[in-house]
Length: 162
Image 1 (cartoon, helix red, strand yellow):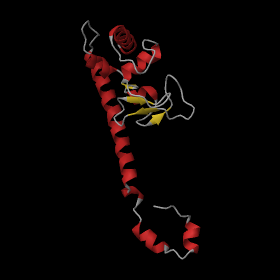
Image 2 (tube, one colour):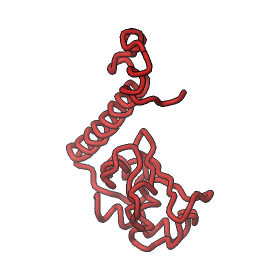
Image 3 (cartoon, helix red, strand yellow):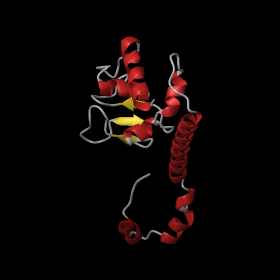
Image 4 (tube, helix red, strand yellow):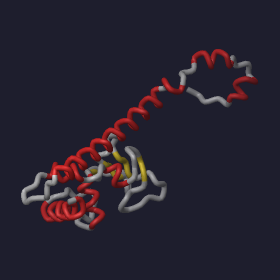
């Protein structure tokens, strides 16, 4: 579809009434509806995270040896809350960005993809991998979070979020 300036359209005899009759109300536009759905999903994820954390605090549980990763994740913020990027593109939290759009967080706010230095396979992860990069346990986004780097990351998260 070719874009036409409204003034040019009207000068060339365009019928504005026909355009308005075919227009979609903003609240029914697919793009607006998709954005509303993303916002609701982000809100739901944040509420769930806060509820899970509150339940954990009220339970009086203390971290124990052999505690599950899921218990730890329930006490941690979502990736969106941690980075301040609510389910969309933003500046890379570790490497920064010239244009502010080299880091993408999924709609559910739990995984990320990096375009730092170009789109390359393997430059993605979850909150644990991002923390490992921030703390220097991993030096390359393409590295998997395993072994000693994984242990250090979990230890750091347990110290920070109980």
